[in-house]
Length: 185
Image (tube, rainbow, N blue to C red; front, side):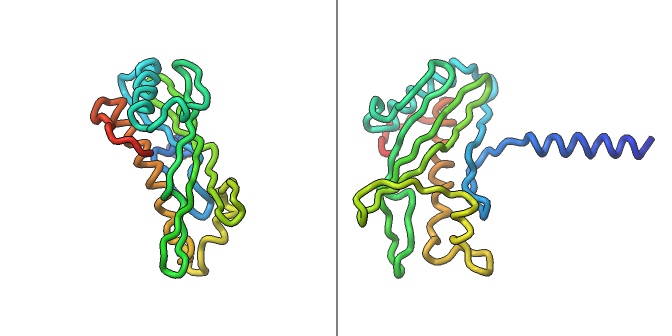
């Protein structure tokens, strides 16, 4: 009997782990977290959607240009930009190129999902944009033999921090804890 209870507990625990959802973006050797889910107890999908649209209007300088697609009370796709999102260390100097990102914000009852769909960086050498994938293949070249970021990639940890800050700002706005009056994401 004890053995059956033990097996049941292990199965329940394993099931919970497999369905666990990330709530912070991270960057590891496997890559950048694809998406996170943010719980918002006692908020309906309609409330979350409405506050998200308001947040975009108050956060981004040109919200009509930022919103690329939307289905009311379901999701919004936005394209934002930053001049300091993806940076490298070049001989001790922090070099950042303009970066664009595309994210989906999907809303459900009591939560929303923030999903990074694309990261693109401008190359002044080729005068064009290229997709920057933070997947396992690319990340294997970012670490040295000791498992630390190579000096060239020392600013990579700032990437998940950027998206975590963006998410925290949205969450606080939906919960009516802040009012972003400074535009600039």
